[in-house]
Image (cartoon, rainbow, N blue to C red; front, side, top):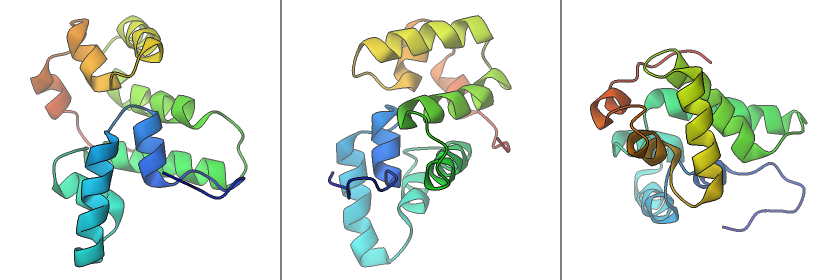
Length: 132
């Protein structure tokens, strides 16, 4: 994905940089967007790719970046998602371990959480929508 230098990252870039979605999932949603004239985030939620709570957290990060709050976009996204996860199914220690593992490779954070046994796929699916 290409953006304007100095411009805040787009939603798809934030989601992929944090390992929350694949580039293929974003590309598929963008293709549907051209036909449906819906917002990218809404299409990803409708397709079951991300939860509504994750979308809201990433949109908050995007707003932080647009307002000039200078932090690494992937770090911001993971911290917001981490706050959601800690409140529902995960200890702070497990989250920290998962974030460290996530930073080592190209594996989505949710997959790392499952692989290290911090949460089950069912727990991830049941994360409630919360304000971040």
